[in-house]
Length: 326
Ligand SMILES: [Zn+2]
Image (tube, rainbow, N blue to C red; front, side, top):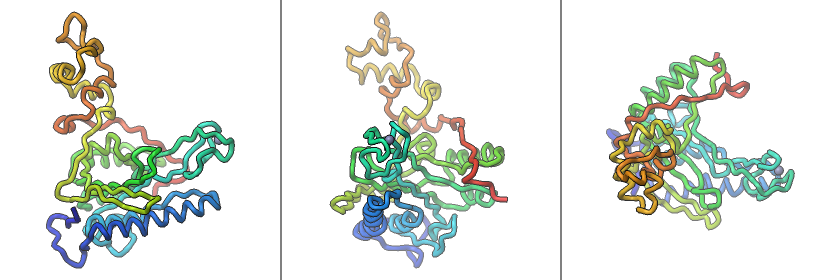
């Protein structure tokens, strides 16, 4: 467990020796404490308690990677080795009342407007890439040696513990490149007021980029304890694509009838075969539904992932918030 410097970078004044103790201290100082203070004041002022993450994310990125910052807050130069850092938090988002549609603060268990307890806890925060000219495009395609993605979230909405995970993406990876180019060609250049490029954690595009999990810590906010579950740049984990994310046609094209048949006969109890196989011909599959594919193969075997292509994007055009630079 520990940090490693990117290949070819010797330990020097741009690197940091970091330790689990230091990571825990950093998370405490820059996330747990500010979050608890924001919660405290949010209860008094009824303002949002969302922790603004850009700069704490960059400190954490340094401690996790062992690479210092570049000494400025300039975009595109987040770490001194050129690593670009993106952070988002799904742990403290503003929620919404399902009954009346009003905003509900993260610590409120019922809607302050109508009293309903039917709260839609929002967890849709994502990483945002601002690409507004060719220089920024080239930065993402050819300049950065690594993309580091940080996310704070909870395993589920009824879990109190917050987790921080970090993944690294190789900018030479084919899907990452296609994803950035597709945005530039089919959105930025085509639309009058294009929204920035959004990358949604743990969805289709994310898995296609073959992100490597390099860090995972669990934060017990109440007891103010941080435990590090995984921190390793040598033995990274590449999460597999869950089969529910590609569409049905894509999934159908990935698996042969033989593979599916084998899976049915090996993994499905005999008394449930009727749902998959014809009663009078046990060697023939019925037309499987998407959920049956997911049942047979919960994740896409990694060697099949490269056969998947980019899904058509439906990106919105922004009206006010985001304008193209003149
Ligand atoms: Zn309400």
